[in-house]
Image 1 (tube, rainbow, N blue to C red):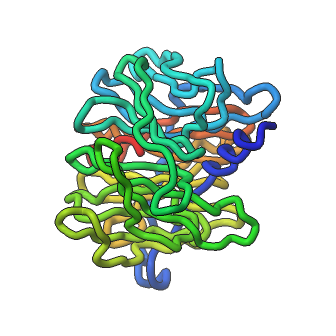
Image 2: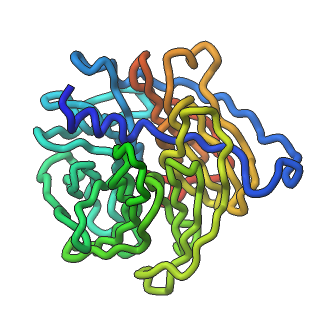
Image 3: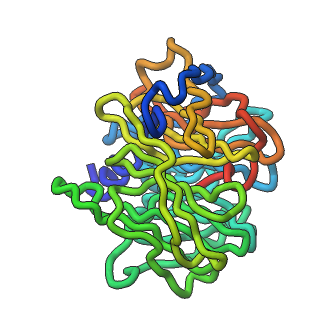
Length: 334
């Protein structure tokens, strides 16, 4: 297995979240149990790797769902497209270099932006052509390993940097990085983080929900008015997950609820903005043996139709369920 490919694979196979701040008695009500429905098998394990890993679902203006296969190698598609009506999956984009870990459409130029764990942000046109490098290189003197991203309303990017994730010493070297819309400059908003992965703006774009793999924690980073610095940090939810699980990507719906994805079991856990457990989304019991991650979720804007990328020995799948509230930009990729 190519080292960079395996690194990207390990990188995104992350995330379980369960529980909330305080003791269980603080929130005695039991979260709703939601069983997701399989939409389609999108990929099979790649020859030579014996694995596949889907991530970064996001709806385009055409209504199709786009997502990445982290461990795909050219000529296999690295970005795929699903027509929800026909359930047809097709290749959208590939190249010879990228290990893409997330995807999101820019609110400014209508292009699909992709994080490459090897240190680059790229974008492609809405038809999958015209690939461009938006940003590459060190940030404030240190290389970046971009994982997830989210946009503010002006197209500026907020990216989790997973630097140090594969280091056995487990030093907290992760960061949250802000990159201007034109890619001309990047600054560090937060550092010393324990492998940050998921990142989503809250409902009012006043701060960021960031999940950290090693801590199984969701934190809220409140930003100043210009969204260029962090003014306060608080823990929203701490996770008492099963052994070997970690918090992965996240999303926020129109009611402000947080959908936290999982590696280690195919589960999405939903929390209120205050950290109260609201729901647990699982795949059907018959499917669970062959599936070991639910990496990310997208809710179709203006609807409650939620779609989850799920992977394991059985292959890469897309599942769906009814979200607790409607989808907005903060629940459409990243």
